Amino acid sequence: MLRSMYSGIAGMKGFQTKLDTIGNNIANVNTYGYKKGRTTFQDMMSQTVSGAQGPTAGGGGNLRGGVNPSQVGLGSKLGSIDNIHTQGNRQTTNRPLDMAIEGDGMFVVAEGTEANGIDPDTQTVDMEANRISFTRAGNFYLDNDGSIVNGNGQYLVGESPGVNGPSTIQIPEDAESFSIENNGTVNYVDAAGETQVAGEIRLAKFSNPGGLQKSGSNMYQMTDNAGAAVDGAGNLNLLAPGEEGTGQTVSGALEMSNVDLSEAFTEMITAQRGFQANTRIITTSDEIMQELVNLKR
Image (tube, rainbow, N blue to C red; front, top):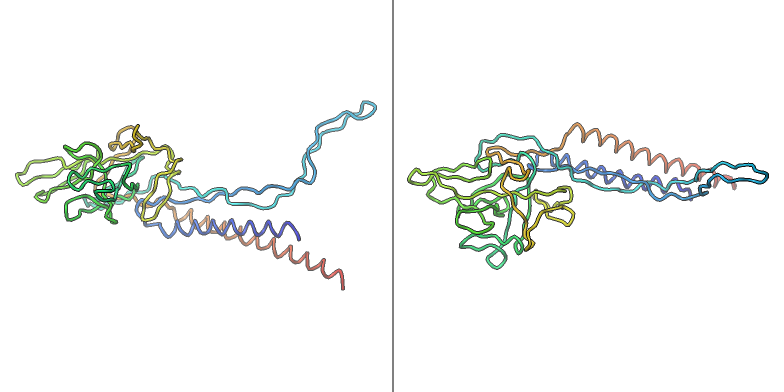
């Protein structure tokens, strides 16, 4: 069998994966906080026909020059599928619980029970025992207890007055109004007209956000390659917005997807043409094999 046929098959598989990635990007063009994917390729191991040789001295003092290696490539393979964490455009909503992060960092959300990391009385969050997720989607809501949650019911993690360590953030039922500052401070106006602090939002910063693993529902999970800073107990080091290079929170706005449709459609065209070119390799190899079969009549 011809090696070119298998090279064409390998190329088709790679471009299929690239089309899958591009299709997912386009499907999430209006998903808040979505980060686009990018597919890269690598060449496969090449078959060496003859190895390289350095210059040598021949008989009678004659010199022979060096010879380069001769190799036949065996196609391409998938190199990586990267998550590109560039800043998305900001959409103004004028809704206080809609928040965008202008810069680095991610919102931290948690879910659990009293036995699994959340104390129902103090609302403290055990960052080691509880299931923790990260997101750039800042569309949050209030539940019936006044806690700030996302669309899946996961609690937004921050710090509350009088609570030692990470906790959920609650706005009292008698609050007349509330607002969120750029540094993550959640203020509310009580029944007496006094401004009080309900809590402060905390962000998680990663030196390699591309190392995070997508888990669906706009959520990311931490991996060993994300580069998160942890304390001596293994808990995640949470930062205030604007602290140590983290971005600031912008209330009344949401971060849109960073997918560029013009770029996505251009990549789709190149992937389609690449796929078609690899199918030509297979059909051409098949025609050559047909000619070889026709030699015996």
